[in-house]
Length: 320
Image (cartoon, rainbow, N blue to C red; front, side, top):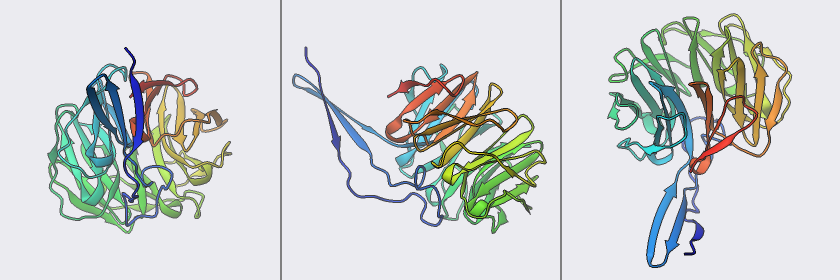
């Protein structure tokens, strides 16, 4: 029996997921094109639409990925197989994090959602502003989201949100050493212990947009446009630039197995755990986000591609 796969591009119009932030044109804020794959076997036709995945997090032995049109994918076997979650929204979901037995995702038009069943179903968090929220972190029993102009804060596991610091111009956020550290437009760095009061840090650049940030080995590492890499050993107050092996934009970074792994536009860059000796390990795959859990890095990208790696060097496609 012969099976014919026909790939159809069904959307030609382009739209931006974050209209009020001059951000990552290579990934999260790129123009999005859902791809429909039609599989035909005799008289039976199955149609499947693949969406762009922009965020991924790990918690409770589960990886949860989110993205375009409210798509949610979950895996409880280290990324080997993936199931569908139901977000209840068609809005863009930009980022996701886990804490206090809860997954929280944020996105387009002020979207704040939370899930207590490992991403299977989601509830709306109370929030009124329509600004796009592009990043979220958990620490000290708080969830803190970021937009291009202010932070959002929840102390009840994502059910209700209040406005934190304003005028921050940040894009992503992480938590470590009792500090939230956020990075963003024109090299912006903000540090905070609670999300309500912020201190400006020094990223070492005023020209690069910093798309991703993570904490590991007692260090904060941020990545961004033109392959920017910089690291902080003083809780985000000052960052020192690192020699980058690429001029391609890096969208996200994660720490695990004693290494930093950064992903971006046709690049994966691996950094040793002191923030030096960065090397390119992949130059064909493009990813929007990466996370680490259970000894495995999981990276996600457009058209729902999901890859796994234990060392950032060798990558295996697990979905779709």
